[in-house]
Amino acid sequence: MIELENVAYSYGGGELLTDLSLTVPPGSFHFLTGPSGSGKTTFLKLCYGALQATAGHVRLFDRDVRSLGRDDIALLRRRVGVVHQDCQFLDHLPVTENVALPLAVSGQDSGGTDANLKELLAWVGLTARADALPPELSGGERQRAALARAVIMSPDVILADEPTGNIDWEMSQRLLKLLVELNRMGKTVLVATHDLSLIRAAKAQVQTRVLRISNRRLQTAGADL
Amino acid sequence: MKLGLGAGAQMLRFDEKADRVVPPTGFTARLTLFSAFAMAFLAVFALALSLAAGRVAERWGDELAQSSTVRISAPAGEVARQTEAALRVLRTTPGIVDARALTDEEQRALLTPWFGADLPVEDLPLPQLIDIEETPEGYDAAGLRLRLAAEAPAAVLDDHARWRKPLTRAASRMRWLGWAAILLIGAATASMVTLAANASLAANAQVIAVLRLVGATDAYIASAFVRRFALRALGGAAGGTLIGVGALFLVPSGGDDTGFLTDLSIQGWGWLWVLLIPPVFGLVAFFATRFAAKRVLEELA
Image 1: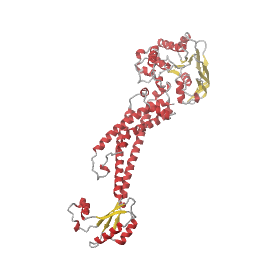
Image 2: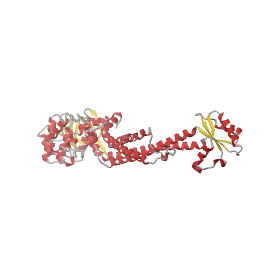
Image 3: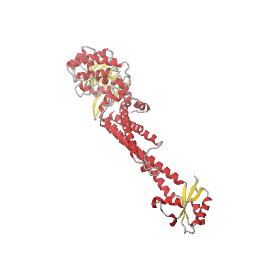
Image 4: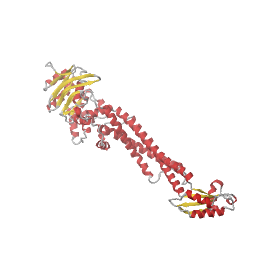
């Protein structure tokens, strides 16, 4: 589903990531950890084609990202739900329209999606906040809205970058529960986080694999996690 | 970025949701609207000037091209004989339909605008004028001058070419200057819309990032901006054209015999050109924004 083969990424003359090789099989749940600035966000961006590897190959759904044009990558990205730490919303549109944005850009009409949208907002607990603008939401609400937007196209893969970075423990557990539910529905989940308690909590609920970026390289994390 | 025919069609298609992804207000909206309004207003005047100059050029050309004059400047006792001789020559010259000596009344009428109606023409040593009507092909002026010099030495042929050509050339150039002004107005509009679109795209870099994150193609992103700018330009140009036409009606008419400065009205097919101004401005904005979007989206990639 996602495959990295000897991938390196350089920026500003320095090599940020080197010799990364990984296969993320369908239906798996991966955590990616490491200190701040270690390259977790860069790693995720390489996975969904927002950045191009400077060496090696990234394959997404068996297609080499390097060989794709921007529009091809855009089409592939519709099969990948991304949750950013800062969420990235259109602040002038209400929550419902932000959540439905992937449908709008993919040209899918609203036939049947209104009901799906309401169901999705109920699933993330945002029914009462459907008409609110993003700046009016709390950190936890923003993360849940971002998760709802990430899954509205029923993507095969969900990539989350520090999804619990700005929310309290209780809310992070709620978000984790949603991610675990998605994984149990057969979705592939890859979460970048430095929150070890989140990883421990996830391991208690679902089979996970934990990776760590250290010294620009990818390693399998030890059993202490 | 691929923005081919398919992408162009997507940009023209009305999509309310796509139009909402870009924040609706901003300085660039007002700038585009005002620029299109002002430029369309100016375009109406440039068009009116061009059309009026064209009418004048045609009128002068038509009225003067097939007529000429022979002037007999001779001592009083010679005028009648030389006039008869000149008329004989003229009536046997190929390319001349008719030649006729003007009566005293007609000569007085010609001088009335300058000397008044009471001018005693018979007491003045005025030359006798002969009016010549030509065939569309015209006559050989050089040959006619030689024959007149032999038969009626006091006759001087004036084929109007000497002063007609500069006038028609000037009117014709005014017409082309009008069209050049319209082209420059269009180019200036395209430049301003491009600048406004660039500013808008740069100001909405975060919006573009979000759209890309959720799988929007470049054509989709560009369409949201292109439609908006094209519609603003169309609206502004429609307003400017309307006010421009209204202002034209306020220009006082000088009647049929005046020049283009007092005949800036739009007539006949000219209205078609006026009606084309708003959609042409919309098209100019469409392509200018598309150009800007292509460039900025490549930069932001």
